[in-house]
Image (tube, rainbow, N blue to C red; front, side, top):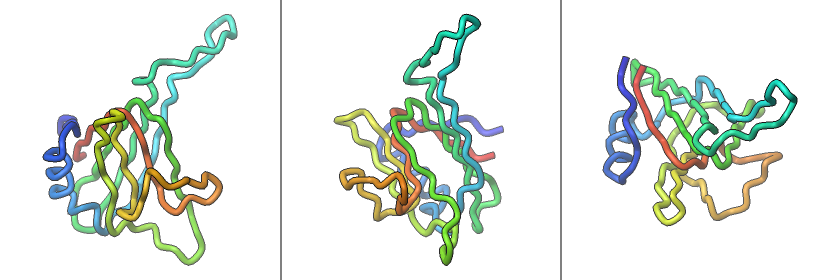
Length: 139
């Protein structure tokens, strides 16, 4: 099993984009989110820590034989677009940026994504994830 590789620099992003062909002709295979929240034995709500908010995103590609797994921690926001009539599920390009000033990594399944633009949670135009950290591995 391949080890997790951290995305901490633009060079790290460049490596991932090269390894996975810029996400061209890939698709989201599965999503698994852990909030870190729970109720304890006394029924008290526990919120968990920032780093316990973890989202796993698995992608398949027509050109890559292995599944790409992305592990986001410190998840701040995400939106996943489901089935839409007349639309394909394939990703032709992605948006992947580090916002060092805010300490965030931002991924979206469209290079047209703008984190500054208002995101409509009822009808998002693309899937996106905003988190504190990102790691990736091929499986």
